[in-house]
Image (tube, rainbow, N blue to C red; front, top):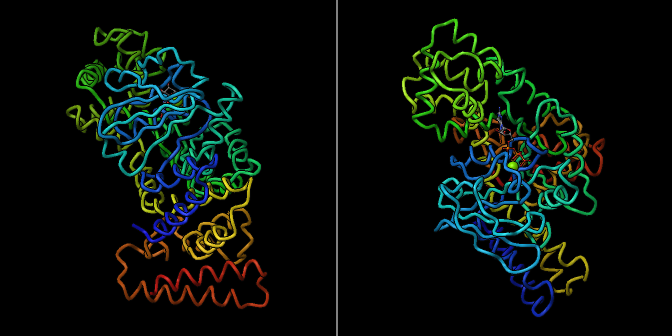
Length: 481
Ligand SMILES: Nc1nc2c(ncn2[C@@H]2O[C@H](COP(=O)(O)OP(=O)(O)OP(=O)(O)O)[C@@H](O)[C@H]2O)c(=O)[nH]1
Ligand SMILES: [Mg+2]
């Protein structure tokens, strides 16, 4: 356990003792409990951005309801648990256990008379290795459904959200051509009086649909994602945007033998018939398929795989690269880009879980005591905790650099890397290859240290710049120790 978490736990414990008998006591207790739980990662974005599909792809199970009306309006937590269980927390009244839906998919859940708008959240316990490192939170789409639902998503995305129910980190889904994604990013960036989530990864979602699902769709998506990441408005909030076709990944994780058999029959059709089918989605569903699959089956396949996925699967089968369902599933996963997202989630979120959780707890504690200042003694301990934690100083500097890219004028992104934004280990921080030996690491840490030391002492450096440079020097010193 990191010492930061231990120190944070002590301060939260002290706050709890002082809050005894007051209205905020249960909330402080919840903050303490949170430090022992997995990191909370919210999946956010506009309506129909593909959030629930991506969540299923990440877990490798069809859990979250996609396209369903009711459930998509409820904030739903998916967490690792010893038993299968669904708990509904109404905005008013005690929690209710719901019967576990068939095969675990919430698409078929019965809300037992609860109106979605009066549900604060739903919690799904599901024993899963994938959920051990992080609890995933599916959020209703922002925009269009209703102000109320949007607002619920928005508050969840800030760490000190109501009653400490906020997320520690966010995966934000954007779609190509939806310029207002940037407005949303700015909206939750600017939410007055609320901390903002520095820990955001951008996803260019539904990447297979880019450029009319042509065979090079995912390459185009990668270029667009890079362009998004470079947009200063996106960059303020998330440094990285990765293209992912959630549908391909979700289908790859759950592909059934019967589905593979249909694809194989379609691949085996005479060339003319097959090419005629694969022109457009409409033709695929309604044109003559030589008895290989009826229109309803084809429609179901489009829903599962998308048009790009069907074309790609048939090409793979024809090329002999997908002789069975297992091989095709592997190819679909690879094509989807999901492994890139998994890796980023691991290095940026899971590896820094303790720091991110401590940050959430501290922000939430600050917010809780905002109304009535805490006793002097607690305030002092709290301030000492915040000031003494270099990890938190680093997070704040990442924030400041995003806010004001001119803070360190000579910086070319190396500062944020050094602060651990791309991963916590020294090699990543120093921009070195993972094979670099200890001597190289030490050497680079020393030159980096010298660089920021010069910057800190340069009379032309602004005062804020010098403070930032000194933080970077400390980071280097920490590594050298
Ligand atoms: N082609 C393609 N379609 C996708 C992808 N991801 C989702 N979809 C489709 O987009 C529609 C919406 O997907 P959802 O996962 O329900 O999107 P959501 O963001 O959760 O939607 P709301 O919760 O209603 O805001 C569904 O029809 C999905 O099948 C993808 O990667 N590729
Ligand atoms: Mg959804």
